[in-house]
Image (cartoon, rainbow, N blue to C red; front, top):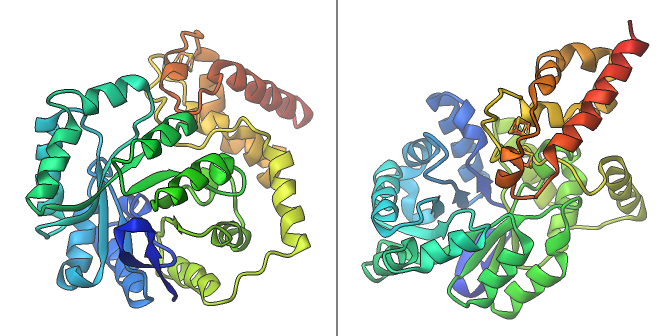
Length: 341
Ligand code: SF4
Ligand code: SF4
């Protein structure tokens, strides 16, 4: 494993980090085994969030005895100071530590979020105070909105920015990445597999490794997956013409508008299983239409409940026209049903 200096934090981190979402679905023993394999393989950066259920607790249990050897990053979705303090204290307890290396304001997407966290009594106030008290070493921020992410970088208030970055969602490549580097900020790449849309880890990491000061945060759910990803980082990175062509093929297949499965749009008041239904086209391409119509039957049948109220559109950080997209997936599902009846 190689180690890099991460932006102006001065922190030395492994070239790849550990994203704390998939360990949510593991029991505690299995999660500890995956985390320990990552640590023993040289991964020193662990990112989680107060919102990721028991992810912090599992990290605390697995890495509590090696706390001084790892970098811990977590986040709060709270916009007000009391809420942020409560969540920070909870994170410290869960992760069995008295300091967080990088504490991030989570998912600042809209201007309203920004006004609330920076207003009097906002979360930023509490986080700055906690830094002065030594409970936080560096303050970071995360966003799914490119224009907001650039604005956040330009404030100069943060040491790191976390943003979706992969060869499909590569909007950060120029503006955001450049702006962050100019300010000496490290960029944490969330969703290295585009929320499951990229099923070729080899090229996913080839793309990310081309960008300096970018730390990829893949999630792991088995020790074998850790071994696989670490093996990519043990080889020099060369992107061949064949790799580029393969990346272009994914681009063509998915287009610009696709669901990243972040689930921020949920719940639908009518019970539409939005995330599962939005993946139908890819599932059909990968599994074959015949298998997909059975596999996706329940979510696809729920699409007919949509009243086009657009509540989900308001919540989608990618501003996807969800009801229209659901219709397209549903039509394809109906077509596949007719062809396979
Ligand atoms: S637009 Fe349709 S899918 Fe979206 S919240 Fe409303 S009913 Fe649910
Ligand atoms: S529709 Fe938007 S908010 Fe919902 S899961 Fe997909 S990307 Fe996320």
